[in-house]
Length: 90
Image 1 (cartoon, rainbow, N blue to C red):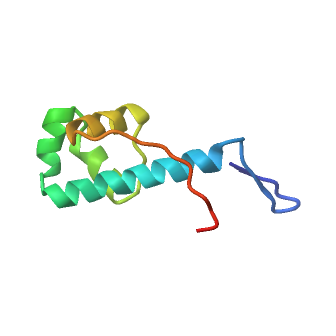
Image 2 (image 1 turned 90 degrees about the vertical axis):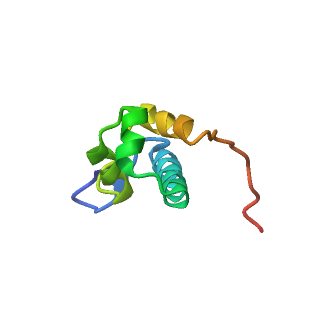
Image 3 (image 1 turned 45 degrees about the horizontal axis):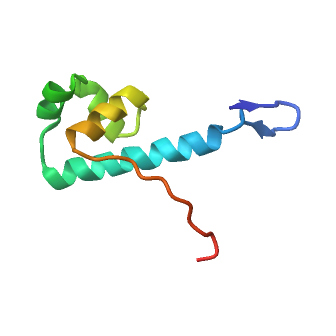
């Protein structure tokens, strides 16, 4: 994302906003799964190979994790992603 200083307009690469919304939603779902199951990040880290610091940063939304790490977490929780289109009218 870049901001044009003269006009203050913010321009994004195509798909940037969609990617950001998608990853943000996936992070929230993973964090919800974490809280529901109550498995400590240290245990999740041992099984997935993701260092606990990265998992805590993801939870506090200070840093995003990679798609690879997100895939490891989905596998750990035995989840898969389902994508569908939803009408905006409802």
